[in-house]
Length: 158
Image (cartoon, rainbow, N blue to C red; front, side, top):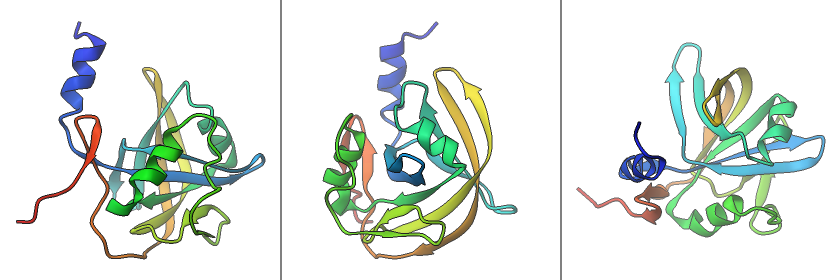
């Protein structure tokens, strides 16, 4: 079997974008940074993400039944770090607005989706979440926040 560290190092060479997953929950606003996010289907509009079993944030978002996904831009590295830190007051900084469903989103994200959880599958030490996008918008023009080999990086111009 492939060793966990080797597996992680190999997958770290796969470049990903980064999103915030946020929700208005019974416990107040909750959110987490996610790089395991992808589109699944155009009809119906579905997305997927993975949430770690050890997450202290995901249970409250899951219980809310829905969440917002904000696509982060290259100006959001510090915000992403804040949303990756345990115990941080994640909504204390920045300019926030809300979707019509009431989920908090950064006002300067590149775009957002309001999602309703469709199904959750156990997947090793994570849950694989499939959600239907019910609303969304493009909001800013900027470069994407890119994660590669354990750090943020920039795209090269063609």
